[in-house]
Length: 333
Ligand code: ADP
Ligand code: NA
Image (cartoon, rainbow, N blue to C red; front, side, top):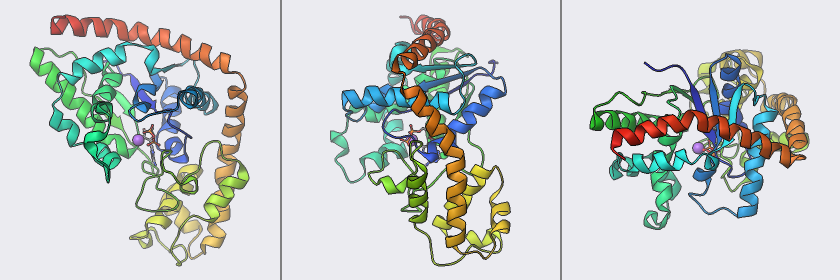
């Protein structure tokens, strides 16, 4: 059996969104505060599966790190670092590339989504192998729990498949069967422009998402212009069925207020969106305003961010190195 350890990561590929925050980051802080050992990573090697402007990438890494600190992750209680600074991630990923099967990668819905309408043969090999690197991120720390949004469920299942095949192929019980932690009303925050698409930092439309760096006016404008249907809020939560956009706004409200969709619908029963949207905007501003302010303060001192990430990488490597060494020994390397 394996001692509990939490791992999760986020890509430095643009603005962090309210979806990242409600679906994942907020839970990261709770798990830290519960006293479980927590390892949180800026996954820059994942970001380069599609071309990134080097200057922007360097800045985005620091921006994500500043968001970690701004939301309440504490370098004294959580290991906070940047993936490419711990070489074990790439090394273990290669070994997992030799354990995982090509067909497993082609079956990943994220790969299908990211190559939809494009020539998949012309995407990077890294984009296809991405889930194998993600398995390495997690298993390099023998992590038992991974707090993520719903879109990552299939990748965690694949991580278990890789761990199981490794254990079976080498006749060991070395890698744990990691559990995803997908909880709450906001495990899949949808785009503000399209209730069938998830809110994403890589969406070309800035109006589709709320960024952690948006100011109060931008947040209010985006929520005011969010797509809805012409009906008012229903009298009961069942009345949200088939209303993707309305459901999304209610879920965002519930997640921010720390309550249930039922409670929100009860409070706003029969009210038009012209009443509900400003209330939602106020709530979002009250939550995100302080985070945005803190992020700006941390971003003003990049040397301090780099120092925190560097110290975190040393702590991460101290856990990873013996696990990597033992993996090599098991394989015969
Ligand atoms: P993105 O998908 O925005 O590029 P990442 O792939 O880096 O972000 O995901 C970082 C974390 O945020 C993951 O745990 C992911 O499941 C979560 N996440 C991303 N988008 C959403 C969303 N719209 N709703 C809930 N969680 C999300
Ligand atoms: Na994602």
